[in-house]
Structure formats: C-alpha cells, structure tokens
Length: 422
Image 1 (cartoon, helix red, strand yellow):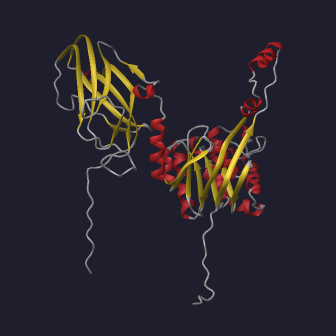
Image 2: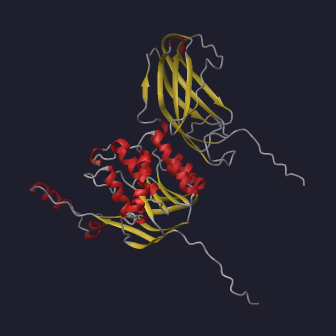
C-alpha cells in the first residue's frame, strides 16, 4: 500500500564524537651537563619501542557519544582523565588525532581564565575582540555591549587593561561575553569554581535561562552538586576512555562507587589533614564505625544500622564532660550535631577510660561521602577538651532501603495517589 509523500524527520545530534582519540607527544629532555648525559645513557631502556611509548600520551582514546540539541551534558572523571582535552576538541581548539567530531551551530566556550583575551587590551576592547571571533558583526556587538558589562559588574574597570584584572574579574568578563553572543552550544570547563558565591549563583541562573531557550550546555566540573543542578545527562571518562553515559544520577552513582573502590584503604580510616584542638585533660583515643553485628565498617547503605563508637581516656577527674559528634556532607554542609547533654545524659565526674556509643537505628543518608567530627566539650564554659574536626570519613553506597539518589537524606515518607473520578 502506497504511503504517499510522507517523510519522517529525525533529530540530528548537535555534537557527535565518532571514534575520537587524541595523542600528545613529548620531546625528550636535553641533558644540561655531562653527568646528566651519562645518567640518561645508562638509564635508558634497551627496548626502543618501550622508550618511544613512554613519550606518548593518549589523553582521549576511542570515544563515541552524541549530545542532542537543547541537552545539558556534564562530563565527569578524575584529574587527568581527558575531560579538558575532550572539551577543547569540541570547541575546535584541538584537532583529534583519530576519529571525527561534528558540531553544528555557534559554539561559545569558556575553558580557561583569560583564554581569548589580549592582556594589553582593555575590557571594552576584549569584548569586541571575543565577539568578533565568534562571528558577530560590530553592530551586533554594540547592541549587546551594555548588557555584557552590566552582567559582569565591571563598569568601573571596563577601560582598564585586563592584565590588571584578578582571576575573578577575568571569569566575570569571560562568562558574560560567552552567554551574550547567542550561542547554540555553551561549553564551560570548571571555570565557575572561580569568583564569589553571589556571582556563581548568578551564572548558574543564567545557564538555567539558556537551557530554557534551547541552548545546548556542555559542562565539566568536579562539583557533583553543581553537575546535579545543571545537567540532565552525563559522560564519565576514565584514563581517556568512555566509562558510562546516561541520566545524571545513574552515572553519578556508578562514578561514586568506582571512586570508593579505588580509594586508598588508609584514606578511609582517618582523613589526612584534619584539625585537632582542645585544652586536654580528657581525650578521644579511638573512633570506630560499627555495623549491626558490631563489625568495623567504612561503608554503609541507606537504612542500615550504624554505631559510632568513641573511646576516651581521662587523665584527671573531669566534671560532666559532654560527648558529641557532627556529620557533614562532602561539600561541608552540616547534617547533624548531637551530644550527650542534648540527649539528657548526666555524665557526672569522669575518670579513667571508657566508651561512648551513638547508635543510629536506620541510617537516613543517601549515597555519598561524609565527614565525621568528634568532640569532648564543656559547653558551660564554651571550652573543648578534645576536638577532632573532620577527622574521619565514611561512605554510603547504593543498594539500601531506598532508590532515591538526589539530595542528602532519605525522608521516612510514603507516596499516595488517588486519581480523580470523572
């Protein structure tokens, strides 16, 4: 049966990476002295092929993925995983060694502080320079100039050479230009980590507005909370290779599990750069995290029982010390701060050694990394005998009593749905 002249329109990706690889080659260092020449000569591997491979780095290796129009795509991975190299290839700053990258439309990229700026030119002149590089005519730049300056909040400094700008001022001007040139694709590489909190929030709101207008966003950041706010989908790369793509929360959970599995064991027991302070007299001698069977654990699932055990030693009689702790999310948000005084426990005069346990019947925390502070204090005199600030950490991993992943805690609640009867 004939279908006539019907046609089906397929939405094409605005960005497509096909078998993309990028290799960097490093020149062999020249010896500066006869001694260095002798050392290099006798330390070289007899296998010339291995020696040649040591001078090559495949920053990106056989990567394939699509970004659809209007999508907000985040790229995550550990330092050195190839994220920034990939972004520079999408922005056409670098060319792939192998494979093909297709980008449709105008790309506005904010990759490095001061990238695209001429340091001897003023802020005003750099706005015209950057906009013209992105294809805008002088008349178009003049029409948006006041808006760019107002958003950057640099009116007083717009005629000052940018070499005198701080890193925050660079970011303000660069971001403002990038979001005002009507891009089809906006690429941002960790640059929002610079600048004050108020301006960062302003930038995030602007990205939301661009999303509503259908602009495709590609974002690299180590800040997973920012990724959660701004991105609907993620690409995860590890050692230059694609590990996963998909909806944001699914990929983040895979990534967090990977980080936990590959974290050095000693780092899980006690953080390396915690602060300890206090007047002494009584000290915390050990802290353990226990599961329902009393076994020491560093990872728990949402809904699991968890006991925080603090061992202490009093070197002299201490009158009514308060034992307390505080749990923080990895970004520094305080989740809870209980202590024995608030619980109505009278400790009396404490001497010698002992154990204090804080028992959580069902851990409400969602998957992520958490930091633990423990303390012995005298709140009446606003004094700490022993205070271990963010001295310990633990993980909550997927697979607990809830499928929720967004946020910090799982609320003890249920859903009800009653359809309207017509």
